[in-house]
Amino acid sequence: MTKRITLTVAWHVMIGGMILILCTILGLSYGGYRLYKKIILTEANQKLILQSQEEKAQELIDAQQMALDQAKEELVKTKVSADKTNAQIKTLTQTLENQAKDPKDIVITSADLTPYTTGVVQVLCNIKDGVSSGSGTLWNFKEVPYAIVTNYHVIKGANGCIMSITNSANQTTGLFSIQGSIYTFNQNTDEAILTIGPSLSPLSVPVANYNYSLAKVRKCPSLMPVGSPVVIIGYPAYAKRDSTLTIDTIGTVNVIYRTVTNGIISGYDTSQVGEPNYFVSAKIDNGNSGGMALAKDTNGICTLGLPTWLSVGNYETQGLVQNIVNVLPKDK
Image (cartoon, rainbow, N blue to C red):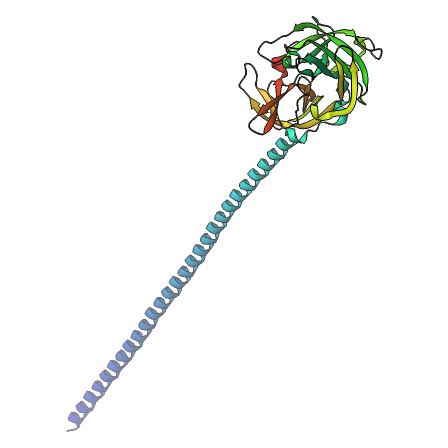
């Protein structure tokens, strides 16, 4: 009996031990599972955190790249704007330089004209209907040492012509006959070169003592720019005064004052043979024909040509200047 009880107790002890061991194993297994689960979750969280950090880092890199791209675009725009501004500045500078050379900025002054005005004289001719008046310029030529350059139509058909010379105050200082021989360089132009004849007045001084300075002035270039300043010197009909002058070979004539009118070259006339003639805005009246037109460029005063009075259109008169290059040879 005692032995049986002892075995029973032993059996229970063994079963209890086994249960304890099993519980211990189960407890350890559950704790291990929880630890494993915690480790797994921790690793997942770390991955999420790392992924988030990488995404944020990439976003920062992308934002920096975008800012860099925008900065590059702004730089390109700034360079384009700067290039455009520089081009505008260059164009403006060139325009200002061109304007500085523009003929409209060149002015013919009284000081420019003073040496030459008394070299323009009045030409008076006997014609069928009375006395005609024109203008001329004192000139020196090898063939004709003391000559008058004028328009041919001023002396055409005249029975005789004389030359009246006045000083800067428009006072007569000499009267001379004009010899009948006519010397011309160019048959295609309305131009004549006349020889100065004997004196007709005690007021006259030797013919060599008058003003031939225009003969020494350089000729203007063959094609002066439109807009270049021009003056016309001559004895126009509108400058006639009430005072008279009696000349033995001509008769009594009204005194006409020498005048100067100014304007610009307004266009070209290409209808004639040779270099173009000039249309000018300076006033040219009947009587100016044969005088002198002066112009000015950056090199100073130059002889432009012979002013010729024309009637054009229905109501207007138009000043035409015959190009000096056509009127006189190159060496004159």
